[in-house]
Each structure stands twice: as structure tokens, then as C-alpha cells.
Length: 449
Image 1 (cartoon, one colour):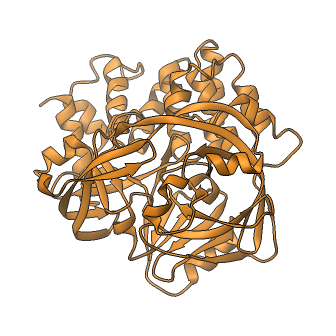
Image 2: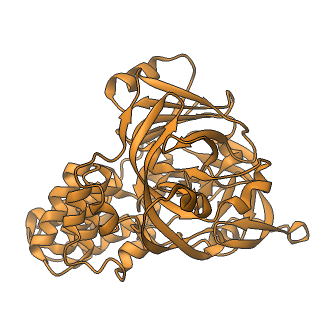
């Protein structure tokens, strides 16, 4: 049996049956990894850890990488991967420790510097994030371009002497009613203390995003243009900037980084007069946030242990799904497509008109039929798309199971292997709509109620 098959079998059994206790030691032994003294990590052991990471079993991969580092403290690759896994798990102290060690081992390598900058970025320590990028050609760095485009030094340094995402407002929470729930949740906000404008919510995006013309009307500063990746593998230019404040409900968030895209062209599809922006995952990251679809409202709570405990004690049955965060906003968790083995899925509330979008390889493997006779033209962040519908008869995310979920195919799924692990697709609006969905970034879990 090949190494890949053994590991895949173990992962599948481990995920599907909590009582199966095949250990990594058994896998390693069955593959004859220990051809040398146990005190020396073999290349096969490192390869096994890499394969576990690629399969998305991060905790198991970390155990093997930790063993390698314990026996060979100067192993750069294993040290870097421990930093990467800690960042995925949002364990920022651990991420900093391992990434700083990786930098000390290979000072000229840039991946550790970029991920360390992201760790500081998530802490809202923009000056340390900028300093971590010293010696990195941000405009040409592959990891920055593909995964961390918001790490722009000029933008980061513009916050010197200020606290990013500084919260002003009384109370422990604020509630904002949706103007509409379909095709995506839409609500009113104020930017820089101005009049009410209309934003939609999209966890498929990172920073708060402004319509390009709206940003010009505000006089918002621009620091750089980066390449954004959108549905169907399309690319378009995204500008990075900032605003003085964003008022949501009774609260005002000051010193907010932004992206800028032409969004007003989407207004007709939303059935509103004018779309001026997007609320994305990075804003939610600063709160215990709930998209309550049944009640038609967004709830933002202060991000602390007391509010989380009060939330957990509130009435109603809820399911908790563990998540990891790749790149600067890709929330991923375990799910299942049809009868295929468990797989990682991206939580993209901005997937409009469907409950799921799968990579083409997964569509083929699951035997899902594309309904070409029902294809139509649609619009994404990168322009027009051919959208082909299909149905997933059985789809789960954590312990939430849905049947006959509408899906769409709009071209290549560019994130399938971008992060070093396999991502099979995304769950979207129609899947999430029956629930109140709460995002807990302190403990890295999503609650569906």
C-alpha cells in the first residue's frame, strides 16, 4: 500500500469514527519510515508530515513536525510549517515563536517574514507588521500576491500613532437590521460620519471594501494596487486604502483599512438603489459577530470571554464547527460532498444564488451532473461569467447536513491548492440562510443555530 493511500485511509477513518484510534506511529511503521535510528528524523517522516498537511489534518501534521524539530532543532522546513499551522489555527503567540525561529535559521527566506507580518496584522500591530516585511519585495512576492495582498507597507505605516479598528460605543453589543436578506444580506452603514450608504456582507472578502467611485467621493487615500482573485479564476485590480471610521448600528469603528473595487455595477442585481461597499471577514474578526438570517439582522458583540459565555448560555440548539483561517480571510472547516471522504470547505457567505460551489475535480469525482441547458450569464468581482447550475444531493458542514443543495459552476476554482492543502469548494448563501451563523475567532469555531 502506498504512503498516500495509507494516510488517506487513516484520515478518513479518523474523521468519520471517533473510536478508531489508528495512530501516526502505526502509519509510519506500516510504511517502513523508521529505517534509521528513532532518534533521527527521516526524510520519510518529514514527507509524511507534509502529506498530512496537504490533506488538511493540521494537528496531526504538527505532531510530526514537532517531533522533527525536537530531534533536529535547526530544521527550517519543519519550523516554518509549525509557524504556518499556528497561523492557520490563529494561535498568534505560537506563530510568532516559530516564524521568528524560522527567520533566524534562514534570514534570506521571505515566507516566514510574510507570515509573521500577517500574525502582527491580525493583532492590529501594523507597525510591527511593516517592520517584519523589511527586505521583502512586497510588490513581487508570490506569497503576498496570492495570499496576503493587504500587507502593503505604505498602508500599514499610515496607521502610525493610531489604533486600527478602534471601537467607540457603549454596551456589549449592537444590532443592525438587514434591509434585505436575498440575494445577500444588505444593511446601512455610515462612512467617515457621512450619510447612510448601503453595504452587503460577504465573508468571501477580507477588508471592508468601498466602491471605487464612492472612495473617490470620500477622498479616501490610496496606497497601492494589487491583483485580486475572484470567481471563475478571474483577476482584477484592487486598490488598498483606508477610512477614518465606519459606523454600524450604535458603534463606530475608527481607523479602518479598506480595499476598493467597482461595486455600484452590482446594484441592480441586489435590487437596491446603490451598493457602495462590502463588509468582509476582517471586520467580523474584531467581534463575536452573528449573521442572523432568520431574524434578518447582524449582531456585533465585544470580542471577550464573557460575551462568548453569555452567547453559549442563550437559548437554542447550536452546532459548533472548528475552523482554520488561511490567507487573510479564508475560513475553512470540515464537510462532506455526497459520499466522498470528508474534505475542507471555505465559508463564503457571498456565494450568491447557490449553497455550494465545488472545484471541477470534486464535481467529477462525486459524479455530479452539470445542467448545461440551464446555464446563464452572471457577474462576479472580476466581470461576467457563464454560470452552470447543478445539485448536490448530500452536503454537510460539521454536523450540519443538507440535501439537494443548489450549486454553481463558473469556471476554475483557483483556491483548490493555493494554500498548500486541498480545498474542495465553498459553502454559500443558500446553505447558511436557515441559520444564525456566529463567528468565534478566539476559539476558531463557527456556530450554526
